[in-house]
Image 1 (tube, rainbow, N blue to C red):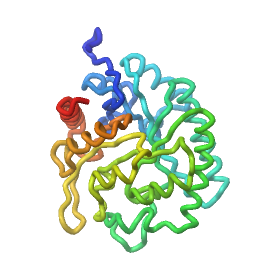
Image 2: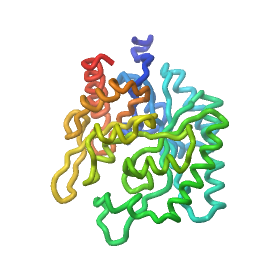
Image 3: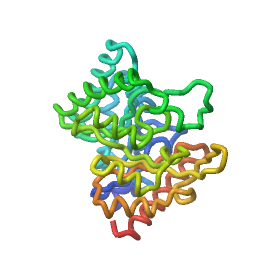
Image 4: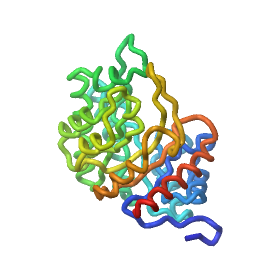
Length: 301
């Protein structure tokens, strides 16, 4: 449905198609990203807080600008990607301060924008010394000691308690090299946290870079009942740990199969498209959005 100035008003859907702001790497300002996402037909935006907040003096100023541009663009769906980097810090004072800061951000986003779901990553990369970076099966959860796991667990338990009080859910993104990188590790982490407000951001595109990656069906089964959020990206695997990223329609992950699982399992969650690769990302945003919407139409979403 076009707006008066030719934009697109977001559809109401159990699975809104959301643009991650990394499609606009050359200009990740809130006004630019939101106007582009609207013009390209997306239902909303995922704002990466660490990247897009750099020019703002406070959470309040940042949230206010997001709210203004959400209103201007007619978006119902806005989500945040939050890097909770200090979650695995050995110093409890550092973890505690970072937890309070994260809680303050999500509280403000709920109060001012009504945002009740966002993406989160806990901790930083956990790398095994002497192992090539792209040998992902040996890093992350595979390299983390029980002590390090405990630091992450403590931080997320504290944050989860805050989220339960304010009615916000957080989805841990499956991402190489962090404590919640593969399905088994992510489920273990969520069970240890023990909160109904913590679930999974199922990013099969990240997990796919692991040599031991399971099939789509197996991975959906592993996360049954825990998926709150999706990230979509694609790539091609070659021997000797060689990978290269592609547009969503061109890689080895079959997103028609992927979307059919979402439909058939009736998973109500945002579908966020990403472009974590170099090149003309704005062209990728148009093509990826058109491709996913066409497949969803084929599948009668």
